Image (cartoon, rainbow, N blue to C red):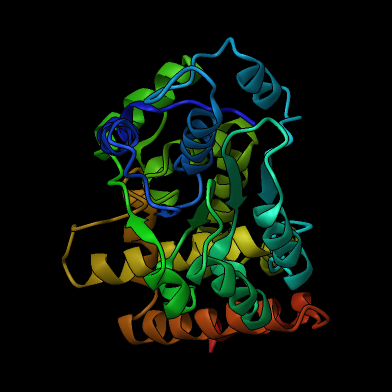
Amino acid sequence: MQANVYPWHGELWGNWQQLLGQDRLHHAVLLSAPKGSGKLALAAMLAKTVLCKNGVVEPCGVCHSCKLFDADTHPDFHWLKPESEGKQLGVDAVRAGNQYAWETSQLGGERVILVQNADRMGEAAANALLKTLEEPPSHCHFILLSESIDNMLPTVVSRCNKWKPKLPEESIVKRWVEGELFDSVPLQVIRINRGAPLAAKAFIEEGSAVKHQAVVDAFVAFVTNRQGLFTLTDLLTKFQREGLNWLSFLLLDVVKTQQGSQEAIVHCDALTSLQQIAKTVPLAKVMSQLMALNRLKAELAKHTGLNSELLLSRWLSAFNE
């Protein structure tokens, strides 16, 4: 697991270092930040420091503990995460973590349990974790990661020391991503990824920028020329979750354009396309289709066996009614 502090986490890391130096780090740290912000690397840095045999406010990097951590074989570090992307963190994993918490340290020091996707625990898992957080074992630290505290059991949140780092300004994110990729990056890529630097970098590296442009171009062609229904449906079926999120952003941008607002436009590099859609589709239709799209997204997420191609085609066809 990569353990490092990105530039935008410097202030928060400094606060943690101060607590470490004063031996005042809470037994349960809750770090809430968007996906792609680098919170896992920051949490790993904290875990590595707590476990280090020499360092107090930062890991020495050379002791036996640090080397084991870097090799992902540290016996006193336990990483609890869902079995696969999008799944809940199960109660069995949490119970295993609770058992680790009460075991004796194999290296004679601290123990750390990292709980990834703490906001995706089922009720049983959350209650199982709560019992351990209420009566924490000595020399054991929990680090909980979440994207949204609002989705967590309030009693679990109340037992933690909560931290929510600020994301850097989008101009700083843009420069960082461009520095990493040695290439210019459209500002809308940063905005599509909600200002999360690692998410924006991955968006380019994984080819999502090309997919996004294909969806936008096909959508503009469809709503302005009434052509390409099957092409667009095929693209949205292929890139379903991402594609529908992109169209949500796009339609919201169209609403803002029709209302004369330029504030917080996500597709800031596609203003011509926004104007084309805004002139072709009435505001009332854009609003109703945006609300229908959000309902469709929720329905497809809840019921995975639905005929998504048929539902997407129906939604798109409503633009012509």
